[in-house]
Image (cartoon, rainbow, N blue to C red; front, side):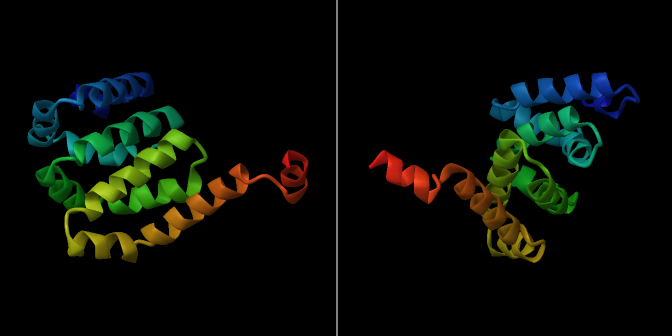
Length: 148
């Protein structure tokens, strides 16, 4: 599956990333993906033009970053900037949720990772996403009056 994510065929890449996401619920798979070099490939997919490829790649990340060794490797491979970029550019709620959860998992890894997220403007982007969500969810004053 990991080799398929390097394919020139975007449909194969999308499907392979989706299967990896589904399999990543298992701890043994989370370790295997790291050992087989899959983290670096998945991180590269976070910046793909295809929304479905990005969707599947970021979907696997909260699961894969449950493991400390995966967090270490993912950070070495530069996962933080593409996650922050997804927060700035995506509108799909699941993509935003998975990017935010992954950044949270990374930040749990310690102060150095927290600082890396902050320096990449990750906190700023998270606040922006939450503010947009709150603005959408909040009724206007007129709607609030009607409900009373």
